[in-house]
Length: 577
Image (cartoon, rainbow, N blue to C red; front, side, top):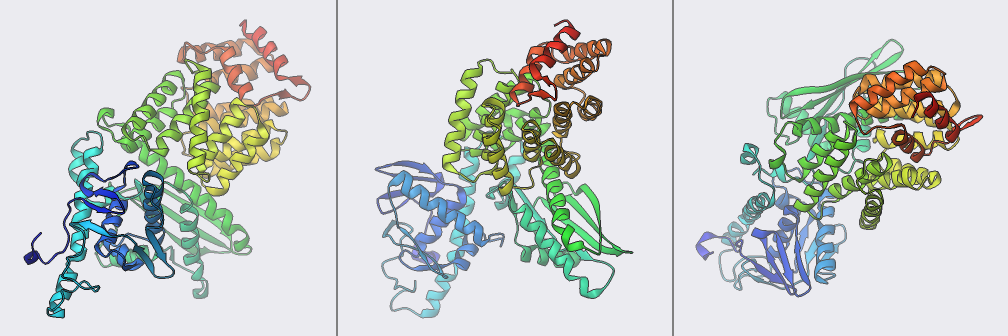
């Protein structure tokens, strides 16, 4: 780039500390190896090399890497951490990015190549012996260099993705390169009626919802200040917030109660996908507030998850990217059966082949391998269990506090190792990190039921069903509830729970064998036979032995006065199997 352009940097490769950086390929190369950076991590490195060995204030980096204003301190810290990790692990370089406490960061390295400052500039970036005003004009163009870098990186990143349909034409915007695929803003809850001095409750509820949802690792929550500004701008007809989902609501007083209304809107399709009201007494409101907020956060998490799955379920799978392959697999999981189970494994492997570093794809594969082994869907059960153990071990080593990984580790302990103590510890740890995951709560409830605490387990299961009633896995939770009742010997309640499960998903063969089991325990072989026939109609591979393996594998040991072995002997005689 010549001097007349007024910019000191280009997008060619550059070197620092023995590392060759190629921004257009998102690649770092050194004698120690080669690594690929996320687009925004490369954009951060691009920014730092503009002023090597000089301070970059956090605000400056936020403006450079997120020119649309959607960056956050947490997001910047994450990028710095990822860049340091890549340099240390892949290139054996440490301490090149220095934190300047309370101010920002500094790249302590000499940069050679087109990103290095011109030799005729002083430490301020102004040319020696020239008009300082001219130097400031030159500096003013630097943010445009960063924006250009981000756009070029965006194009390169898209080239790595799997082939996509016409949606790819819109994928060049920065929002497509967000650190996570799902973005959400919680707008200030409106306070409509009642005492003015109580209006602070609405803002407190807003911040509490943000705090709960922020614990979900796969959702990007914009800062409250930006959401508040957006609400004001929207009222004025200027809607500038770049997110997929909007949470809004209102708080009002109705007699002796507070009435809280929450809405979830998909901005891309301009549709309201969920709305619900929550009523709590004014007296003792603060005692119930956390419970209500958790119910709201869990419901929102469940609805967003379902919306993302529905968004990709109708697309041609051969043009899906890694994220969408994972969502397609999640959609298959809700069908529950041998063919969907094997199909999920195939989709997860394709996602890993497309992105070998995808933690989400590896977690999905580990989860399904455990479920396939538990439900007798595996082609080679021992091989699947061994692979699941390896995946879970490496995932936990990479991120010990990943809630989804802890959850699948808990499922392995419960379903395969029948180690209820470890299962409960791991599942509880996952819920501590992400209390919005109703499915993990339901699995923990099942573990408690089979571990001799049926009342506590039933409470957790009912809580999941209440907080996320439209979650597709809610049919499984009703099945878990049936198992709880079986462990207490309450077969009429178990029958009612299975009726709920079948109402939610009439195509799960296990559910009909569960009903056959209950009818046999109640000495009604005729009805039991009908249910067993329906199970085999849905899945010709389904047998009583396969159902028994799934139930015993989850830790079911029978009811008071009759062991599981004796119960299944009775059921086998009842069904002539």
